[in-house]
Amino acid sequence: MAREDDDSQSPWKARSPDDEPVGADIRDIPFKNPVEFERAARRFPHPAVPPLDTLHASRRSLIWFSDNRTQGGFARTNVHDPDGNPVEFGLCVYQFLEQTCFQGDRIPPLDADVNLRHVLNELDDSEVRYWKAAVVAEAHDDSARAFAARLNKSYNYWLPVRLGFDPDDPPSHSTFSRHWQFDDQSKAAIEELAIRARYAGLWASAEFPETLREQGWGRDEILSSEVTLEEKLVAIKLLVEEGVGVMSPHLSFGRDPDASAFKLPPAAFLTLFAHLALEKSYLNTGTRTLEWMDLPAPVPAPGTVNQYVDELSVEEVDEMFGNATAALLQQEKEQSISDPTNSVLDPPVHLAYDTTKVEWYGDGATPWTSGILPRDNTASAWVFGVLAIVDRDTSYVLGALPLRDQTEIGEYLRRFLRRATGTYDLDIGRVYLDSELYTETALTALRESGVDFLIQAKDTGAISDLLDDAPPGEATYQKGISFGDMSVYKKPNAFTWPVSSEATGAEGRDRPHEAFLTDMDVEARNLEGLGREFYARWGVETAIREIKGRYHARCQSSKPGNRAYYFMMATILYNLSQYVDNRLAERLYTDEVEWSGEELLHATREVNPGGVPDWGDAFDPAEADDWVDIR
Image (tube, rainbow, N blue to C red; front, side, top):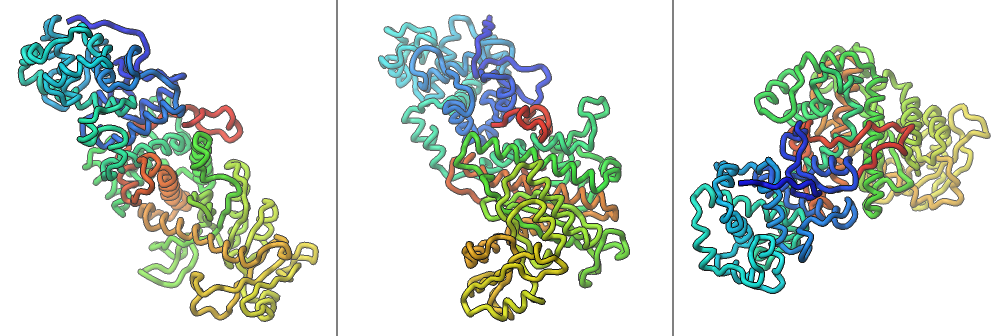
């Protein structure tokens, strides 16, 4: 049976690159530029290709893709036959069938144990149109009588035309019945292609007939149904791939991806560390269990991981993290451009800075560690400084590094703030610090960055006097309060805030007021409001708790670069969770959806590095305007 080659652009035409970059058939989608095509093709399954259970779990993603394409998120295109109703379901089925099975040399793989090429080649030329009609009828769930009646409908003029019948005198139901005496192989192929064509209808925004809507098919019917676990995991995985796609170039240890020895993509390391976090295991054990699972990403050998990581300094890890985070935040900004109502980085962005201890089970004299109260066979810990976004629906971590000693707290704050305003290009509102940062170095770092701030003050010296004089239930302030060795011209302001009984930790307080240090005009501000807003600072502690408890792999190394890398990978996974959380409900077309860190780790572990979107060049803050636009 001859098949015509058609060079016209179509969403179903089987013309794919030879290298199959995602391990599956990529169909042509007529976007306005190759980059958009590459992104879309890698992120959303073509209805002709993956297993049916994958398609079923991707129903909402297909609808999301279709809506964005037709509503302007992607380039507009006519996805149906050029003549007739552009959303008529039968024409969509015909178009899908014609251009996946009857044009070109690529034939859809089927779940059914059927050689589709053999089935099609066995068709006599006179029978081809009846075979196509059988698929269209099956997709409609029509009997021969119902399908014959459908073709007799005046509004269906173009469907019989495309099938090769006379629209004024289409075949009768008895004629169809006579021609539809197919063998078991052909019947199995017809049934599966009809199901795939229904998913093609979702992809193409087709209007499903009432009989199929009653069975749960159609955009509104699917979106009104409860989100299944499989749909949720597919959406999480797609979002993770989007985030990994922009961060990967910055996590490659400086290796050249075009080099012949480049066999381990950065995504492979991220999937490994997701596995280690999920299994709460060390590197050697974790790599063995991951190899047994036979997942898509290559598993880096423990020796390879140690070789790459051992060569890193703390500063190099910091640079990797900063560039990867900048790329992810750029992704967030691009998303907000296409959907301003969903922006999580609108200025001003409020931040909080804190430190945390990662317990160390090695020698307490190890450099870079600090003493802690003895517990669980430990008496020392690695101390990390962490800067995070707080006070809104997201809490991205912007900086995370181990401190060599306690005196570096202020310097790390300066370093992180400089990056937030420079590399990340964030418009910072306020920065919140707890009493551990009640130091001159922290205050100086904040002033150098030109940001507003609130520092929780310690109950000593002039602050004690201010707390003593605070009227019950009222806020009070003092301008130019004595602080350290600062001269009169550099003294900060201070105010007290009456702690409400509902505030976290209000019970058992020695004082009914909390005191804060600031450079803001305490005469012109609502001090009680500022005091309440300070408790957004808890967001950084929540982020730290998630990083340490959910996303951190177990680490035995005593090298500061290694410890920094492990914490960085945990923080990258945490930031991915924020990216997913910001758009998962939207992607699933639901008001809210419950999901867990374990589900994100499962999805990350199953990422195929070959399926990660190729967004273009790596993000360079100095050339942000030239970076590939992300949808």
